[in-house]
Structures are given as C-alpha cells and as structure tokens.
Length: 396
Image (cartoon, rainbow, N blue to C red; front, side):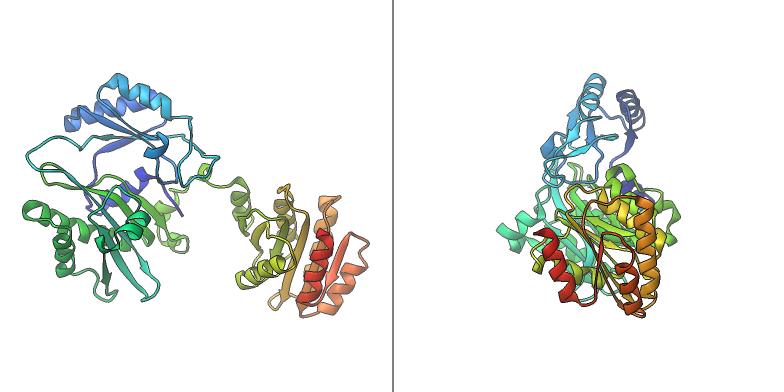
C-alpha cells in the first residue's frame, strides 16, 4: 500500500529519523497557517509547498515550489491544490492534488557545503535479505544513476537475525564521503531508517534526497514508502493511511467485494480463481490473439455473489470484447460455480459480449451441462485449447 510523503514522514519521525518540520494543508488558508506555525516554532523564513500524490517526480511537473513569504505560500498553494499533476510516474492523465505539505526550507546558507544523497531500504529477493542501497548522487532518478554511473551505487545487506550493525552504518557514512559531525549524524540516520523499515513492515523506504545541511544535519527531505498489505493487520494505525482517491475506483470496488483486481489495457476480460491460474489464463489469452483486459482473482470460494461482482467490474471496461471465466474446481465444485454464473448473468441482465466458461475439476461435466442448457449467451469449454479457440472465435 502506497502512502503520502507526509504520512511516510510521520512513520520516520516516530522512529527517530530526522525530517524537516512540516504540516499538511487542504486549502491555501491552511497552508498559510502552517507556514505561520513553522515560523513561530522553527523560525522559518522560507517554506516548501509540496503536492501530495502517490507518484515521484512531482517537482518536474510543477508540484514542488519554494515560497519566501506568506503571500507566496498562499499563491503557490492555490496553484498546486486542485491541479492535475503530471509526472513521469503518473502517465499522461496525471493525478489530481487534494493536499499539500508545507515544510521548512532546509536549504539555507552556512559554513559547510550542503549535499544530497540517495538511500533506500528494500528486500533483495536474490538473497532473501533486506538491504540498504545508497549513493552520493541524491536528487536524481536512481535508474539513471545505475545506468550511467553504476560505481556510485552501494549496497549493504542486513542479516535478519541481528539487524543492522554499527560497523555497517559506519561503512555507509564512510562510502558517502562524510566526516566529523555529518559522519556521526549519518550513522544514526541509517540505523534509525532501517529500524523504521522493520518496525512498519514496509516493502520499501526510499529517501531521495537524504540531505546534509550546511550545518551538517542529516535529514530525510523527501520520503516514499510502500507498506506490505499482508502485514497491515499488525498495524491498524498504518492501515488508516490508505487514500482511495489515489486508487483506481474499479480496483477499490473490487477490493471491497473481496476480489483481487488489476486493470490492464486489453480486450478480453478474465475471471479466475487463484493467482497462478490467472497468470496462465492471461498467457492463454495472448496466445489466442487477444490481450488481457484485467487480472481478476475471485479466490477459492467462487459463488454467485463473487461472480456477479466480477462480471459487473469487468463490464465497466468499454474495451472488453469477450469474457473468459477459467475456474479450477478444487476447493469449490464446478457445478456450484456454473450455477453462480447463470444466476449472476440473470441478475445483471443483457450482456452484450460473448462469455466463455472453462470449468475443470470436481463435477466439471455437470457444470458444462448447466452452462449449455441455461439458454444464455454463454459457451462452455473443458480444455485450455478449447477455451483458447473459443476466445479467438469470439474476437474474430
């Protein structure tokens, strides 16, 4: 589950990771009040107005602006709140901005040279261990750094039995070329960041940039965090961070119905029980000359209610030219699924796209008979090849 920057910084702050002070605002007036509070509490004379959407590259799209007066804070908040922000990660349609984060500007002059670094914590799937990936080239896309200057990317793998060790945090600070106060601050920062990642059961922490101020403080100026959905039952407070305005409305509807749904760009809707079978079904659709319009897993207990919900969600996509239902009757009997398909079809009413139902497993023959004798515009199939042929014919 993705969360906003201001929410990510709340997690960091609770785990003793240094972040710039800031407040979230939903209106220009709230933005000005936030700037006033920062002036009173931190002596801030300049502020950063940052759009809050689930995407990176906000500055490139005009979603991050510096203000040097309260009037400028209001002006820039008015520009950003309500805008359709387009970044390299949003696609051409962009995302609407409902909130901004007002933070103190920490890029102030001083006796030392300020510097930006990159740091992330994530799972190294090749080794099954968490790792800290970091670079001296902060503020840039890490993919670009990896392509052009791979020698500037460092990795520190963490043994899950003991967690991050002091020598590892010191090695990180050394590889980043730090010394003195900045070295000590980075050591504390790296340890706290890793512990925050572990404590929150996150999939990924990305801090870009990690910023060394002119007085050698180390701060997480930006933060991108993805939480592990499967661990949210342990973190009721973090589950409340979900923002459905950032999600596809159809995917939200599917999750509320207990379905696993991801919209794709193809022309064949598919409804399957089990993620592995769903992936195989999508491959089969491609081989038959079509393109999957979605990934939809109804789970192991497909019934009339889940099938009907799946139908309604798939049919909302105007690109769908055919629907393939591919269910293996292991946990659930095929005849029960067939009856559910017939009942759901009748409840929805006239469906104007061909439907191919492939049911295999317990009572598959009885299920095919139910489909064939239903009198509905539904075609049964037994084998994968037969289903593929019927999908091809439906698209012809």
